[in-house]
Amino acid sequence: MDTVLPLAKMIRRLFERWQLSVDDQTALLGGLDPRYLEEALLGDLELQKRAEHLLEIHRCLRVIFPKNPDMAYHWVAQPNRTYDNRPPLEVMKRGFDGLEQVRRYLKAELCR
Image (cartoon, rainbow, N blue to C red):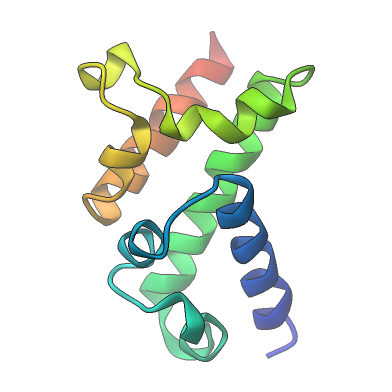
């Protein structure tokens, strides 16, 4: 319980920084209405893993763009050649596998 409120707060802040619509937030949360994030995080292991992926994506972006925080926050919405010029957000919204795919891509970019 002690970690749920801070985790929910971080995810909400990230969604705000990414300027996501409620529909986009819902898609990233696996269909969960973002208003119920705190309660759902208590017992939903998949949702906890989604939150972990989202925060790791954010962490990677902050490392990749250390001098450009705006780019770190806007990257998810920008067309990307890796995804056939679609924004990474579109890949992430496809489900858990999409979140993993973007996370793996960013982790590989960190190793370059």
